[in-house]
Amino acid sequence: MTPQDTTLMTRMLFTDAVVGVGFPHPQVGVDAERGGLATVKHDAGGEPVYAWNRRILETLSTETLQDLYTSLKLHEVTHAS
Image (cartoon, rainbow, N blue to C red; front, side, top):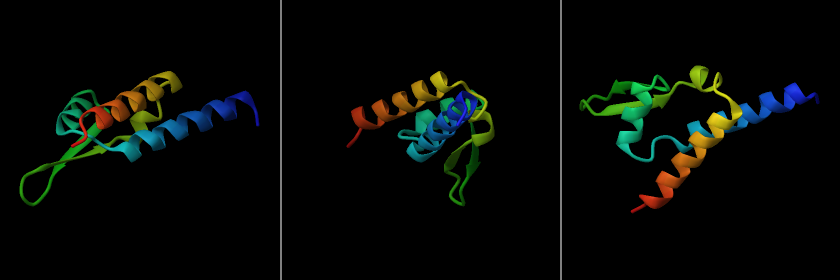
């Protein structure tokens, strides 16, 4: 495996991790959507449903993805009920 392959695989891993964490708080979804990292649709009751934009996430650097994942997990842990 080349260094480029390793970098690509690492970015893919962090992209999968971010998508897997989801949105630990509604405001995270709002902020991600405003930043172009997520999309929002509304369910039948009018509630927002956020989804990470994987295509955009995959353009981010490994460091940015790692920072995003870390902040999502920190938010998840510190705001757990």
